[in-house]
Image 1 (cartoon, rainbow, N blue to C red):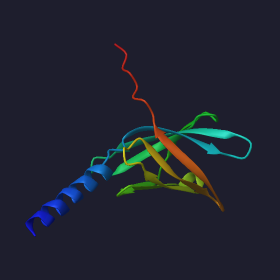
Image 2: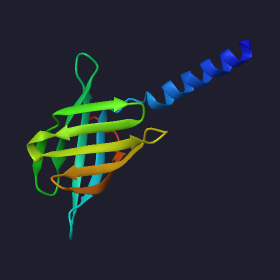
Image 3: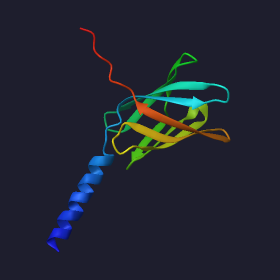
Length: 125
């Protein structure tokens, strides 16, 4: 009986570690907008209370700092809302924390949108 409890505890610790990945940083994705791919950069940070927050850039359109109104991570499920665009996103973070596969919904349309973690920027010396 005791070994089953240890096994369950180890499993739960592993799950917490697996899905407790820190999403802060930059993520790159491409949104299929009919005849073109719109390149997006998702910037994820944490506020003072440890809640995820962020903004997005529409690279091809030269629009930076599109505010994300609400963002949450529950287990491996990431959701966020961009009120100014009447849009939302729902995705699943990969087990290794390197990608997010999901769906962008705007007005009455939904399209796949996947993000990959961007390489860390090297600091200039």
